[in-house]
Length: 260
Length: 247
Ligand SMILES: Nc1ncnc2c1ncn2[C@@H]1O[C@H](COP(=O)(O)OP(=O)(O)O)[C@@H](O)[C@H]1O
Ligand SMILES: [Mg+2]
Image 1 (cartoon, rainbow over the protein chains, first blue to last red):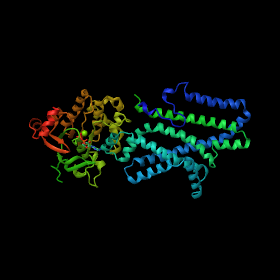
Image 2: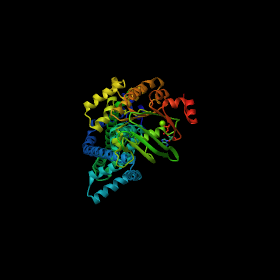
Image 3: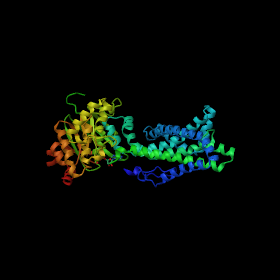
């Protein structure tokens, strides 16, 4: 089943497919180029670039934190929403669908502002936590759609076979359907991971000192706009490329049972 | 319900519609313990719907279905528990592709009956031996031929030690050369005394195994009887027409 591997990449770095794991592919060229450029700049012009990279380091940690936490939360929300969307219970189904509808109808940046300030105002949650919640709520809806698609893609006969053996709905879902759905879900989820990673740059508008915000702070103090943003872009590129490789590695591992 | 002579499956005046289409129209049929009933009829006549309503994969609109003394539609009936007594084999096998053959057999007994892994695997290997594919125990379903997959599917159903086996055209998706190996397993099962309801177009099997043949058309049972009666002196025109087309 190779068709699960070919994915339409609308945005974000492409998840490398198995067939282009050679030396001369876009991924290798990009990562070598990006890492090479960073090293070259630091070594040849340490004056601005070494300072920049030191200053950005804290931001990388924050970006990483926001990304990982948001991915984990968004996956949980996504699973719940996906299950809700395929639920026979009308009320649950409606709640899940409405959530997805609302989230998809509002630009991410607006949602970020809204959730961030709403949380700050009513719950006194601030900064990093609020940013993570906002990202998760938003991406949870996207992931929910991916999960729903993955679940509904599994043949109806699987459910019937499980139910006829005596499994209840929940057992059928967790023992039979979801373990198979991962395979179809993972590539688009991987794309969402990468898109999420890049979208975390939006939290720089809030009071979160992520990679982009650190860059903005540094450049507005030193007026080294070009140098700073060159570094910021290169660092984002490296992180994104590493994540995309990780996702494709995970995919290869998870599709073991359809090898052959 | 009297215990001794009560039928193990009792279907009474069952109706089922899909939209405006009447798939089952006032169908009544019963099966006694150990009986083998073969259901035949043209495509779309409601055979699958009837079979699938016995284990409630389809819920009927009206009428009652009693299985082993339990009304399957009664709110007090635990359908999941009742389904453990009803093994089902599908036309499209429906093995779990993410599990090995052995795991396909052990999953339900372990999760639903609390059987230990050792016990479940020993039993599963015995069943695989019985259907003649013990050597494939550690392969995945996708590595097996259709006939082998269907034999695994039968073994998987048997692993729950059901009282009744339901077969919905178990050989219709198979290449001709693989039909025999599946029918052989079913014949063996029948000889061991299993209660079976089989939807099939294999008339040889019906002749050899059936205690009773049921002919359906347009959602109703047109006639039923022993294979001798059925194949030599059918009463209804529609039955004769169908038999003339298929034999
Ligand atoms: N889930 C369903 N939705 C709509 N129509 C169905 C469904 N299942 C069966 N039918 C219809 O009901 C009729 C009987 O179907 P079925 O029991 O599968 O017939 P058979 O197994 O004898 O070929 C057919 O006309 C079929 O199209
Ligand atoms: Mg059918």
